[in-house]
Amino acid sequence: MVEELTGTRLKIYYFLLSQGKPMSLRKIQRELNISSPSVVQYHIKRLMEMGLVSETDEGYVVSKVILEDYVRIRSSLLPKSLFLSSFFVTSLIIGILLWRETEIALSYSLSVIGVAAAITIIDFMKKRRKVKF
Picture (cartoon, rainbow, N blue to C red):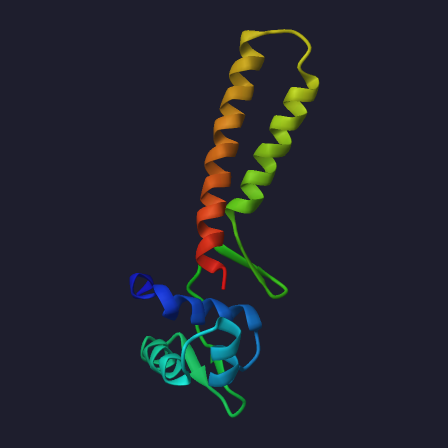
């Protein structure tokens, strides 16, 4: 099911999820800078067929959350990798600040933490680009 969420459909889904309240077709169109309400309606219809979005009297809302790699904090969707990368970056900074002598064990530890931090930061940036509207 997640494979079918790409492009404009994914943007609309993320947008509705981040809003947390019913949104009209025109509001979605304006906020996401989509060419016409009919394009929004087409994608909303597909999302409804997938069981991800439902219609209320006030507009459209997400009825099923399928994003396991994201955490919603207020109106922001944050990849879980953000927290992991923050931990590794903080560990790396502390390791660098505590570095006094050139020891092989310390060098190895800092290298491992640095690589892990880089991997999680890259993962965070990729996921964040998907969410941007």
